[in-house]
Image: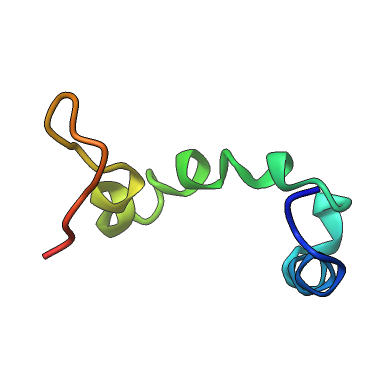
Length: 58
């Protein structure tokens, strides 16, 4: 595990019950809401230049 016990417990507390302690079940959330909350669509992804391994948020 990449998280220590304290961090893992904090993440678990943040997950909704329906996630069943599985973060993967939440990964499609942005896809599910972008049609209802159109303002959030640009937040769904970020475009970076090819071969650039960082992103400067302005």
